Image (cartoon, rainbow, N blue to C red):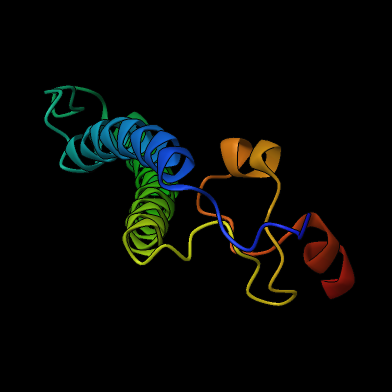
Length: 125
């Protein structure tokens, strides 16, 4: 029996459903991050003393920078998941881009947008 060169349509459908669920959750998380950046919660420091206000604004800027970075990472994650959906449609999903072998199902379930097998990932180090 020869080694499988790609996942079956049924297996691809299973991964597609997993990825769609992850995209939905990631988009919700992204929206939460975006809304916190826009400061829609209504907590402000307009009625506090000037000294405290300055300290609070400094902490706010730092927090906004961190939230902005998280939002960017989340957006990138969504893009990677959407690229994985395209690979499913092209029936190239789950094939390592370096070795050409199938990426293990366990790895794809943990990291559904993976394009490298564990073997290839370890060789990068």
